[in-house]
Length: 115
Image (tube, rainbow, N blue to C red):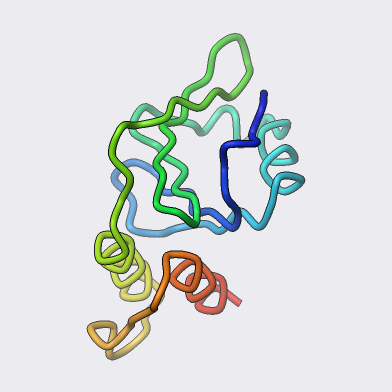
């Protein structure tokens, strides 16, 4: 699978779940895609959101994860809304005050919330 279109870091958003997971780079993504537990858990609606807001839908065929690019990227405000939901799920307070200047910064916020 080629992942040169993905700008890292990126977020994994699982369908019907407010929790997000950070993918730090291509090596991290490849490691996940080789893990049977990850492959088995991929559902329709799961997506990868890169640091430019580009959205990739996830799927699995014959035991391999594939990505499908969507047409419209997410805006910073849309990504921040996801980050706020994630922060709320983590028990953070004042989630309405969470902000970032770029999508990359918003992704780093998710990483700091889960540390």
